[in-house]
Length: 512
Figure 1: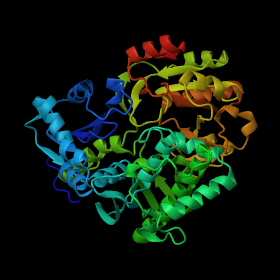
Figure 2: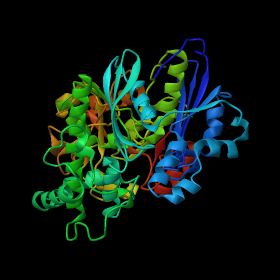
Figure 3: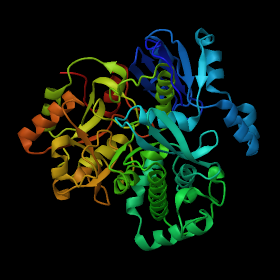
Figure 4: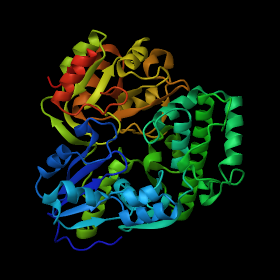
């Protein structure tokens, strides 16, 4: 990675990730990140892989871009499909650039660039961190060829140090297990993670050992990059007879144990190769917040962008290109980069709803860029109610075993949770609650919670709500889950709010 002069500092860059799952677009203008959003929020199709016209229209409202950047190299992806014997993927696949040229002719003549899939993942993490130097670890299902990689960010350069290639893929393994237990791969992996807490030790250990024997090549010695080596291509999934007789929860627990151990092993290798105390972790596997918490056993600080999957690479590609052209890193403003619902954050209306014991929504400000609601498109409630979890699962049409997350003032987090780190603004890590009997709505079966911390600077409105609620009740946290129901994208605009409220009978506050 090289960078040139600052002559292009005012350039406008449109970053695009699409054609596989969860398409997204991002805009950098004059050295600022001004927009980033998911296509699904415009098309209303969960994880929509294609660029919706309203997403592109919104991105172009900032002006015609000087450059368009794509998050991967389509020729290399086609070559991988050819080598793997996937003739359908080779012959039928249309690249992001071909899609843009076909449906958005006004962009056809704008200079375009593409970067390697794992490079844009790494860049998205590095350029949204505050690290001058760091180990960078990327683990996902598959890029062009890479499925895991280690990079070193130092002295303004991002250097690749190690790669694992297809068909060896920890991400594909976890997605294959997701499908094997009856969930939707590339979408429901987070449900599998939640199911793992319900598995029993002895039968899940038996499944774990079976996976060691017939899936992974290295299980007694998982040194260096060998932790990712597989015996077979899991892009085709498991056989129906695999792990016959085991419960889905036991299979989930076994898979989660493998994920945790093998991520940790690869992270140890990243530390060994780079000698760094800071880690940037990216790729879809970085959404496994249970595994993420273990990384503090190796690194002092860990940064995971709130959108570490492919959608986040629309921003990663744009940031990388801007940096290469200018030598400048745009300041990371936080994840609130999508569609805007204007007005004061509805603190007072929320307090009234809480006093009445209601479950309610807040849709205010700019939508979150990433899969998790962080206060601007959230369903909120008092975590002390014994029936809140069940009521929320009914509203969201979710399985009853699914957990909910707490949002808490940053300065009080350590008083109520055994935090692996000081702050967790993006719900990337789990911690055990010190007083689980007092807050039943946010406690998972294993006693953990996926904590979101908030401070005044990060989100003044949400912080003010938490502080006022704490002063009135002595409760320092709220239940926070996304403003949607299972299988649907998060609410984005005012029309979505009206539809959601009328359909599910839930009050959604837009502003005070």
